Image 1 (cartoon, rainbow, N blue to C red):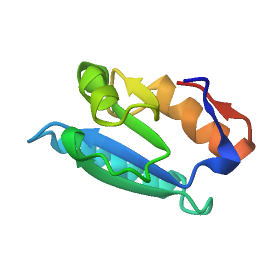
Image 2 (tube, helix red, strand yellow):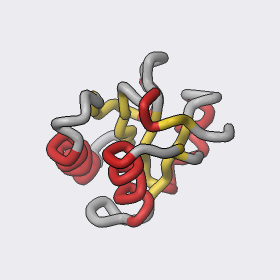
Image 3 (tube, rainbow, N blue to C red):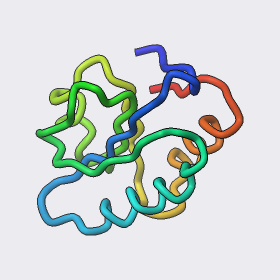
Amino acid sequence: MAGIDSKDIHKIIVACDAGMGSSVMLASTLKKQLKDTGVTVEHTPVNDIPDDADVIVCHSGLAARAKAAAPGKVLIPFQIFLGDPAVTRLVNTIKNGGTVDA
């Protein structure tokens, strides 16, 4: 997947595995950071990613499952739940314009 232009991002899904409360915290943080952009942020289990998701954010340990559940979607894997550079780049690109690469 080549990527997606920031203006075409309307919904971000933070995908988790059962029992990962940290991903709920990340979704909440992303909602606050993107509140004035018009981008919706939702939290769902990795096996239930909705079809209308534009970007999937998930821990790198779940990346393969997220790709299988949402083929063709831009996937942003991260290592740490708060302050990960990949998530920071995503937020900055949405706010400032540009392409979000998978």
